[in-house]
Amino acid sequence: MELIRGDNLSKTYNLKLSLTKSIKVKAVENVSISISKNEVFGLVGESGSGKSTLGRLILLMEKPDSGRVFFNGVDLSKAKKDEVKEARRKMQIVFQNPDLSLDPRMKIYDTLKEALECCKYKGNITERIKAVLEEVGLSSETINMFPHHLSGGMKQRVALARAILAEPDFIVLDEPTSALDVSVQAQILNLLIELRKKLNLTYLFISHNLSVVSYVSDRVGVMYLGKLVELGECDEVFNEPLHPYTKLLISSVPTLYMTKKFFTQNHAITAENGEESVSGCRFFKRCPYAKDLCREKEPELVGDRHKVACHFA
Ligand SMILES: Nc1ncnc2c1ncn2[C@@H]1O[C@H](COP(=O)(O)OP(=O)(O)OP(=O)(O)O)[C@@H](O)[C@H]1O
Ligand SMILES: [Mg+2]
Image (cartoon, rainbow, N blue to C red; front, side):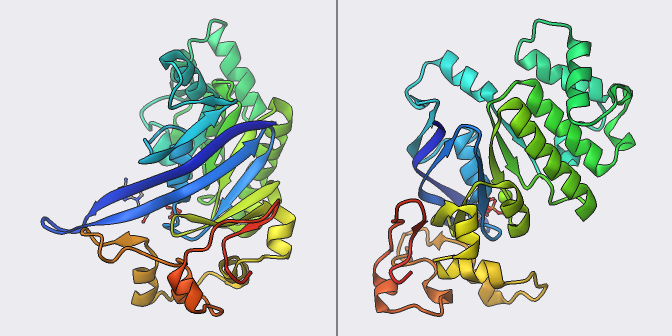
């Protein structure tokens, strides 16, 4: 059963390069995704492909230029204020860097109390905080500590506790383990899997790390320059990728060597006057299999369970 759906979401940013020059960045263009209850939907793609923007659009943290978000079948663009407020409570986010998301001057207790007060919790606040800390693997003494007393993994557990306190149905996890050491990463990933089962949670799991995504996700979407280019069951997409970009992602290893060409091709930029607007397939310039049709016509995302946006997949 579907919990969350984004329909044809688009978002363009005006990026100021200097006092007089600005460019338009199509961060997300016409993307639709549907996530079922209790599912983990992974979102992969290189930096700047629009993963976080899509997450923010779905959470209503940003207003889309066009498109709609449905939560539990309710169109949030048409819902009443109270309904939207309730949906916002049921949708939480955990960011990559807990140092930026936790206030260094506040004790863990105060940070978590604030989160509980936001959702107008009526019960015993201290008891509830201690119970949730235990749920994320932290002792009750943690409440008296400040963020600087905690390790990176512990801070991320606090960030997770804060999200869980609101009793959400859906959590966007935006690179939740990317700032952590590999051994701590595994602990947090296993905790996320455990919490999903225990609390019936649904995740949108954003990461550029394919092995992390394939470990936690049921289905996966691959983004390239603001577009979803492939989508399907995790095993199928990673074992039998259809899109040349997905194949490249899987075969590539991180490299420090980045050329100017890479950077100029790595943004869905259109000139301010729109003259340079992108036509055809966005992967055209980097695709080893590109033909004339790819330059001329943009491929649609088609298929049944395993979808791909490529003329020659
Ligand atoms: N608030 C903003 N103002 C201007 N441009 C933005 C803004 N947010 C995102 N962008 C641009 O939109 C594009 C997509 O950014 P986004 O952060 O969604 O990518 P991402 O896939 O999450 O990247 P990363 O893996 O680095 O987190 C980028 O080109 C980025 O520079
Ligand atoms: Mg991001």
